[in-house]
Each structure stands twice: as C-alpha cells, then as structure tokens.
Image (cartoon, rainbow, N blue to C red; front, side, top):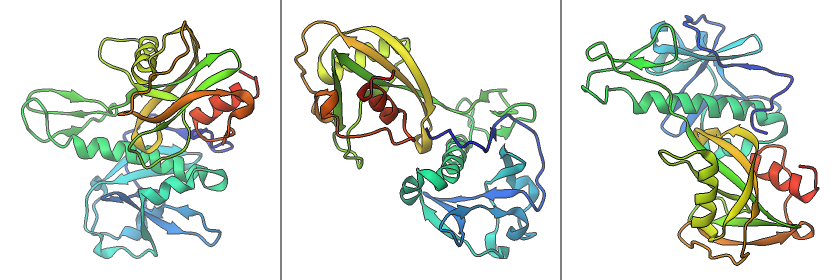
Length: 281
C-alpha cells in the first residue's frame, strides 16, 4: 500500500532539529511541489544548500527522516538565490507516481503535503486570533497569548467491503475526477465509532443493513490527509440497493468472477477487493 516503501523506513517522530546544507528541503507553491527530475525519470528533492543564504534556517521546519536522510519543510523565504535545476510539479501529476519505483517519492510528497496544509490552515489562533508558534517538544502549534494548542488534523474515514455470499458491493463516485471502481466509504461523524460509521455510510449510500463488522487494516490517506480504516461486513436482510445518486454514480453487487479490477499494490480499497476476489481475507 501507499506506506509500504520497504526497504526504506520512515521515521515521523517529532524532533526539534536544525537543518544543515545536506538535508533535503520540501517546498510547495500553491498546488505544486518543487522537485528535481532525475535521468531515470524519477524525482528527488533539493538539498538545502542550493537555496542560498537568503533563506534563514528558521524558515525550515523538520518533518521526518527516511533512513539517514532528513527532510525539512521550507515555509517561507526568498528563492531568488536558488541554484538548482528544478521544476514545480503539480499535485495532479504527483498522483500518477503511485506505483513501483516512484512509490517512495509519492509517499514523501503526500506526507509533506499533509503537514504543509496543516501549517497553512493554522497560521492564527482560532481562539484569540494571534499568530501561532511552533512547539519545541512536540509537533503542535501554540498561542503565547491564550495558551491554545493545535495539533495536526487527521480525518478518520472508513472503506467498506459489504459481502453477500460470493458477491460484494462495488461503486463509482459521483462528481469526482476518479471514475474507476471503489468500495463504499465515508468520514466518521462526531460521537460515533468507526463501526457505527460503517453502518451509517452503507445505509446512506446504498440503503441496506449490515452485520458482523470486522476491522481489516488501515492506511494513511495520501494527499487528502485522511486516515482510512478498512472493514468487511455481511449483508443483514434484503439485498436490494437504493443508490444515493448525490454520492454515487453507480453501485451494484459483483460476483467474484465479475470483479473487473485487481489489487494494485497501492490502495487499501483495491487490496480489499483483491482479498475478496481471491478468497484470501
């Protein structure tokens, strides 16, 4: 899946570190990320030393390490002294880097974008309006005036494989760029468990009841910054589907031998579909 970058290992624990010239800088401009294109077609980030002395070290915020490489988010600064040969890669193109050799870079960009978006959305205290400051002992922002603390936002969502014998519900989203097949899904609401989210989302999207809800596996949500929890469950009662056309373009029962997709080695959705299709879950 997206987080499986073996033999590389991500260390996302908070450290109050200062950068050096050989660390990597991650810089976002709008919905694009600054990258260097390698000869083999892959991409890499730029060393901090190439950004020049006009950018102060306090403009870099430590994010994570991969193996022995340290990555810092460049939040602000004058780029006129930049000496590297790089380009701004739109996130829409980053989404095409999901598989094989590019997976590590895709995962790093997604994780960095998640933190970048959180910082951009939380420049000011929501309680008193003052500027928020970086914490020194944990990954959070705090207000010196009213002592409010803000932690990274992670939105929990469920992916649901609804099973009825040798059939599973597959769907397509309505009004989204992605037009392929998916399982049912949705975000958790205030005051409900993830199992209750499964029951509610299935009822809202296709109008059936479920039972024997079993947790399968979780996955970070990529560029969207979610936390996806996968569940399998069984149909409870009538199998007639009433599709919510505001959410779904289509949904129907697929027998195992009808399923038109395979596990892509990347997404929780397709791993779950593959497990059902091959009877290995």
